[in-house]
Length: 419
Image 1 (tube, rainbow, N blue to C red):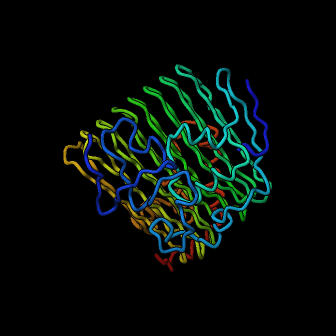
Image 2 (image 1 turned 30 degrees about the horizontal axis):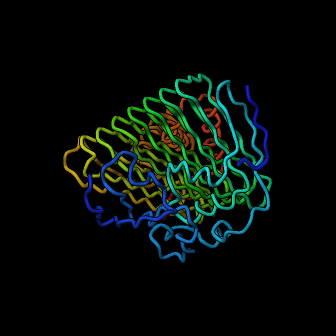
Image 3 (image 1 turned 90 degrees about the vertical axis):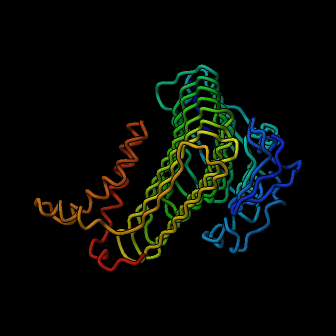
């Protein structure tokens, strides 16, 4: 086993446009593979992600009116947007199984590899300012039965990280990354997945009070590969994560699951972009959140682009929000951009509301006290996602975290629900 204990490891058609899209000018700073890894169409860019570029200068300082920033608390995120040098580092720990290696990664190496360029200023700065990068390689054909678990603990201060994960053809692996402690942390992560691979990637944000975490996680999915991602955000003051995915060949399957529990004063924001740039690909997105307490704010923005050449694809995106008390606010914005009708299916749904009165009545009519009935409803709401993680220790920890959150809920406040 290799042990990690490091501080700070951190077709020739014209450009396609839609109500959410603008043509992207070519630039030496842009990702060389942004056009879609084998797709004959030129690059397409949604206004939700204005310009993919490695150059910070291509991402102006936001003022809050931009589509991708209008929900975000810019004042709190300012340290990660300002471009100041790092003052601290995360402490990383974990063990790597035989055959899986970790090596240093420079910014130039990350750009040369070019899985995906940053979509916003925060990610571009994270890449530019990170004092050290890390490359994790899982060779082709590697089968790892036990999950690879990496823990990152913040010790205060401003810090950045950039990571490249390469998973070879036919590999099978589960990677779990858990964050805790205190930090103002910006990150840029690219994950390249080979043909026929079977991959689970789990990110758990269990930050302490006052932590701020912003970043971009991007996935390039190989031909006939199956990828599942799970993102859980349960702590910190502000968490703003962008997750993007596209396909390097037909037959790829993507499942994206997420959960978040937002307390008073917290802001948790998840933004997803799935680019169906290859035929016969599949994506399924299911994110669920609960909010409680005055000033609790969640943001979920999903965008699925189905290109003209993406024949026979199937996609669905869903976001569900459960308001446990008054004083909460949830923004949920699903988007579909469909440029061909020759698909298997495409849909989205979004729901935001309080407890289902029929569910509560059913449970209470069978002698279950109301407080316990509410707890069971929330438990079931999240358990349907948690059970898909496939890592028992992580599943147990997340269920325990949900229970701990519920212990602080004031049920009487739900009668004064504010949406």
